[in-house]
Each structure stands twice: as C-alpha cells, then as structure tokens.
Amino acid sequence: MSVKGPVVVDLKFERREIDAALANAFKDRTVLRASDPDADLSDARYAVVWKPDAELFQRAPKLEVLFSGGAGVDYILGMPSLPDIPVVRFVDESLTVRMSEWVVLQALSHLRQVPTYLKQQRDCQWQELAQPEAKEVTVGVMGLGVLGQDSVRKLKVMGFNVVGWSRSRKSIEGIETFDSSQLDDFLAKTDILVGLLPLTSETRGLFDARLFSKLRQGGALGRPVFINAGRGGSQVEADLITALENGVLGGASLDVFENEPLEADSAFWQMENVIITPHAASASDIKALFRNAESQMNEYEAGQKLRNVVDRSTGY
Image 1 (cartoon, one colour):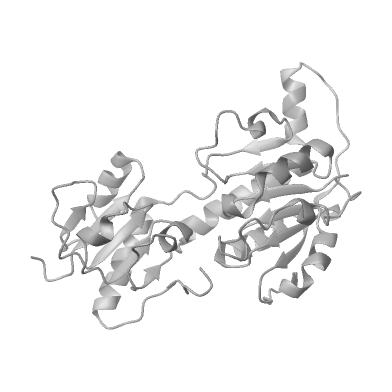
Image 2 (cartoon, rainbow, N blue to C red):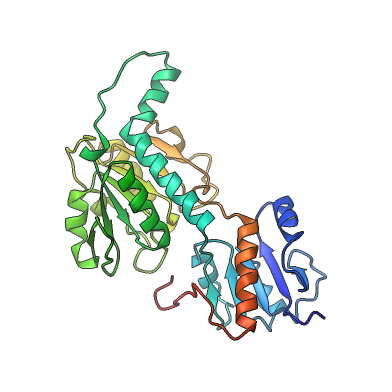
C-alpha cells in the first residue's frame, strides 16, 4: 500500500476524459475506481465524487474527506448514508472563468436580441431591431460567492449596471449589494436576473411566480429576463413557463433544470425566447479537479486545514 492515503474516484463524467486526467494525477497514491464492482475500497481515505453511487460509503467505510467534482454539493448532502466527514467544494479558476463567460454571453445575447435575430434568420427575414446600450440595463446577480463575484465584475466591465444579492450582505467595490431583508428592493431594480445560488432549503423553489412578478417591468429591455446557472431545484418550472408565455418575462437562458436531462416534451424546447444549454455553463476541468484534490490531500496529511469545506448548516 502507498504511504499516501488511497483515493477512490466516483465521477459520472466522460470515461475517456477521466482516464486521460488520471494518467498524470495522484502520484504515489493508490487510485481506485468505484465503477469497478470488484475493487476493494475498504482502505480508501479520500473520494473524488460527482453523483456517487449510493453504496460508495458502505464500500469505503474509512473515508476521511470527500472532494466534490463541481461547485455544487446538494446531491452529496442529500445522500442518506453520507458519513460525518468534511465535504470540499471544487473551487478553481477554470470553473470560475467558465461560469462568468457563460453569464456574460447570456446577458449580451438578450441585450442584443439574439433569440429574435435567430428566428428572423430561420424565417429569412431582414429587419433591424432597436437595441439598448448595456448601461441602460441593470443585471441583478443572486448569489455572491466566488462564481457570482467574478460574474458581477465581468458584467460591469461590459458596461451593464450591476447589483448583487446574497443571504448576508457582501461588500463589492463599485457594486450596490442587498441582503435577504432587501430582496424586493433588489428585484425592483433588476432587468436581467441571474441565478447563481446553491440549492438549500431556503433556495429550493425560490424562483417562482411571485418573485418573477417583482422584477422591473418597462425597463430598457421592455420585459425582464431570467438567467439560471445555479441549480434547477431553485426554479419552479411551471411558474417560469407561465411567466414566459404571459409576458411577465421576456426571455430566459437556462443551464439547469428540475430534472436532468431535460425531458423531450418540455415546453422550454419550443420557446423561441429561451436559450438552453445542457448543464454546461461551467463544466469541470477534470485535470484541474484532480490537481486541486491532490494538493489538498497533501496539505491535509501535512497537518494543514482543508479549504472550501462545506458548512452543512447552510448547505454550501
């Protein structure tokens, strides 16, 4: 057995990408695959997981630390057999940059009326549309963690007026921020609402008809837009569909859904004012994930504290 603690990998990612990343990862450690039913996981000290198998913790009873394969940890925290050990979120520049790129792309797409222009292209229709400037539009970002703060700053660089909301108030230079007691004030200012919230008991179903009705109407875009790359469980999709159909919302960009993959008969597929991506806004770079986990394992074994450990009382 290696001197360094063994690690088990249970990632529901593309197998070829995992194999390629493992070729140069976890040197001097025994690497075990949960996907191998005959693998003996009984001595594994660490696990790198994304949607792990329910029996993982029975097969690996000596685990000391879990490393999430993504920024979200709601699936892990919801597992009934989860042991009382640290759960570490994946926080990495690659993950952060990918998310803020997606958020900026979607905000610009709705600002410059890309969905309407794509429809006109399909219809062979040549018609210029009136378009506001970014400075006339307020983007409100809900969730001001690492991903949210980077998105806020990059939206600001693009010229948008940007405001931010989080459960407890954050201080970000040049950005007006709001806390949980000021949600209505935040929504009243917002033309484009961006959801980057973790899924907790407080955020489940938060984006509903009542919330959408409080967004600013009659702003530079005419009707507000909803963008969500946080968690699908935070949106009430029946309410969202109704809001899009009756004009409470003018459009949406959705990367996450209540059920994934999105059902083939979902109304979202046929909505020309909706942009859909398959939970790909900030796909994990597996090599970066393994580098991050390996670095923390080494530090942990040297007596240092783990970074980005989940607070189970808040869910993130």
